[in-house]
Length: 116
Image (cartoon, rainbow, N blue to C red):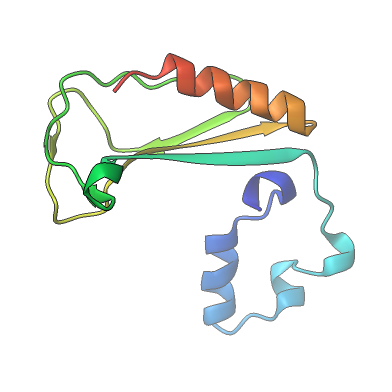
């Protein structure tokens, strides 16, 4: 939603929680114009063979991908110790494109280039 509308949802939520109206925050439906398509992929340490419980250990190689139309949010790094006590997400990629095929192509490239 943030990528295709340009609206910072966390900032809007904080302002609304502080008493601002939707109009004061700029969230008027007629003014919200989506642009393009976004896809998000979360890379986690979850193990499907263990009912998606987080795997633990040390990340021996971590190299993230980037590029035009790609946002990367994550904490991964080579040498990182993964424990079962926190969120198992290592990195989240968000790809944005003008249309679905372009966005899929960007996400495929990102997932092929990253190394964990």
